[in-house]
Length: 290
Image 1 (cartoon, rainbow, N blue to C red):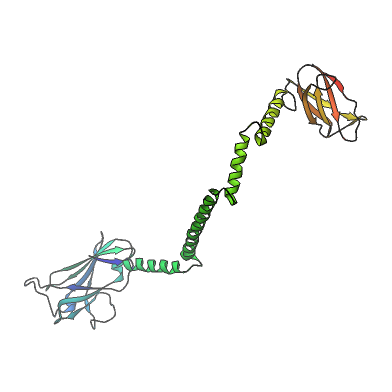
Image 2 (cartoon, rainbow, N blue to C red):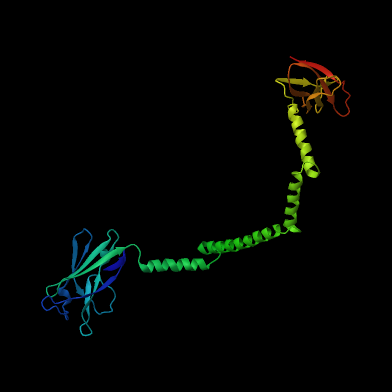
């Protein structure tokens, strides 16, 4: 079985022609006594009368034949078939050579899209492209090589960091040792950073107990702070339940551009305390939440 690329041109084949009676190779045949046909897959045969080529090495000629060498290659004939036999549209064609003095010869040809030579050409083009590091596949290969090198560099850096971290006297190791010491100190609630953490936790608990700066009551209460009849912004305001100002239940909050500040308070009587640099407020100011 032979493979030919679809739409190939000037196709030459070599075939051994046999005497049907003796089974010997036929020599000295008259070419014009032979018929050349091709049968494309699921199509009728297309026949032509063979004509003789001038020489075994002549240029291709449609439906032409010649005996190659009756002495040194007995029975071997060259046959040139027309391009139409190999056109795109089918995947096989049978080439036929017939005559009264010979057994009919058949050549089965598979028509393919790409030959091994096409594949080699593609591979050669890819290899050439890979050798070029400025564009195409070569640029991609160069990038991959760079990434591979950089990954190795990153691994080296990571190894260095890990080694440095295991050293508690300098570099990252010293920083880690310091962080470990801080964490240990924080876990100690009696002195150092641990004592500071304990104090901050206590302050956080105290703030939560009074509901935060806005207060923990159920009524939204907005106070408007004025000075000389004009709303006063950036005033620090806090609220107590006693005239002495010792029992703070909300604040300190700061008034907005409209002089307003809002607290969350329960029903009852309260005292508002105000403070702003350069302003003398009358403190405290009583108000009632109902």
